Image (cartoon, helix red, strand yellow):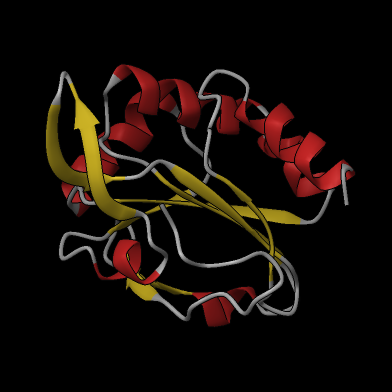
Length: 155
């Protein structure tokens, strides 16, 4: 569970995208950003979430949002994922988990009674000033865009 609160400054980050370019929070100053953390490329839930964000991408752009995904997968894995599903946004390869840990999106999980460390699927909606507007921790992978937009309407 993230220890970051809505209304606080988003932690600064920088990491390499799928083609080795550095992506940082600083680049999104003056823009709104949907920063989403997900466990693994090409898995059912992560694919559903990425494709939902892809399908709603134009609507999100129309509302002034950029979208960036973060997972522990490497650049090559991200390239293949983007090509396979025609994803129009960048994916950061956070192989050392620095960004995930800064956002509290890496931690203890439970599955089948076993505890292990992993990615906590979380989405941060960051405003133009770099402030966290909303945090979505119970992500609906098949309807994430709708979930994001309705969370924002509740402001």
